[in-house]
Length: 511
Image 1 (cartoon, helix red, strand yellow):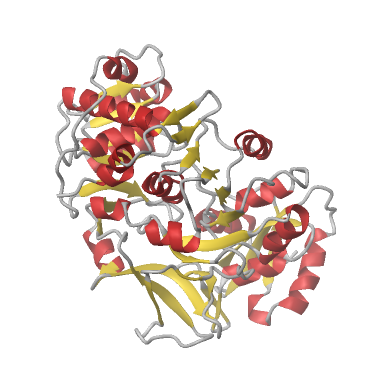
Image 2 (tube, rainbow, N blue to C red):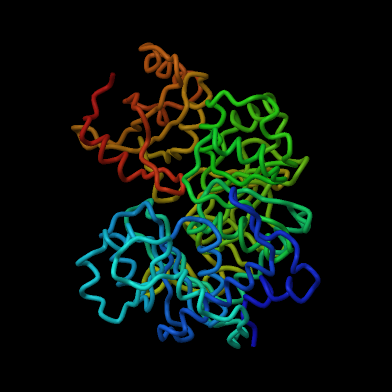
């Protein structure tokens, strides 16, 4: 019987690290002992409301001690934590609550008020409000204040459910990847063998904890190793992140390519990241230009890698001192990887294939999505849907999602390759490419680019000329639109279905 909270928290309390800093906030640091007491109090509060093992506890909170206490408190009583994205609208929040059949919602007052009448069809849902504010619902802080600060972990099996993570909705339909107790404690090979993480490290993630990437790197991994994590309630901005780095001196930064690009444009001083050993990127392919720019400007190495909601932890990663720009690195120890083509044949070096992975933290299925589960999980392997090629040195290169690719003149176009060519132009800050049928029904590439400050009206013509030299004829965009920003999820992933809608609305004639 093994409840994940015993490895994540109780092992720290019993192993001489009770006084070590677990969570750093601008207000004050929290030791592992303090976090342990908060989690126990939260667990008591949840049980008092009737929450039973394997019932779902939805978390709709900003990052901080309350989020961590609620998450670990749910695990401690054997409940299933369901983190929710605060930036979704009330209709989407209500849909997740209904889909998950949550027994308890822990949320800020504004979120509860926004849900309002949408909660009517969920009479079994109980609510705890965190942070004050009149809603008519009981307060999390009051309930925790009345509770004891110790609570034995509910005995659970490794195969029992512990966590549901809803996918980010890049295709418009999020679904819950079910994770088991054993999944949450499977991050040691990445933490130790790749990152070299120790209890002396202090990590900072710009993504929020509802996102698998941040949950794994900014909570599960540091707690598993007894390290410290920096948490902030607000959504990250470049100057605020630089200030946090200066104040709290993290040693590893985890972020996404979009935010690394924003920080690069923010005119930060060259020593802004002096406390970092290195940085890590995931969520999307890191453009080689960004990797090189951080090396040159800040002396900072960014390790690009690849993970998924379905895996929590990294599947592929570059290594400190051996990162290769433009690649996702090599498999993390303990992760089996294979590339299969459309016929199920193993792809050789330089050949494209769909990435399949087998690892200890992989989800076994999607909640209430039988057909999607059958397509994604088979024989212990998770079919990621990502198109990769492996070079002669064993490094894996991301070519996009299989459902993003399209054919032009009978040849496949990988949007990531076209985007990389456009991003090579010094005046392009961001780029997204989709396929769109013209008036004759023929599919052509359509590109959207975000210009850097100071770029002039000649950008689009310059990009057409660049494409003539850098891309094959079938890859060249027939339409290039300069836009203020690209549609992205709260986790930074490009929403190509929204780009396709915008491309259709804009028409397909060449500029």
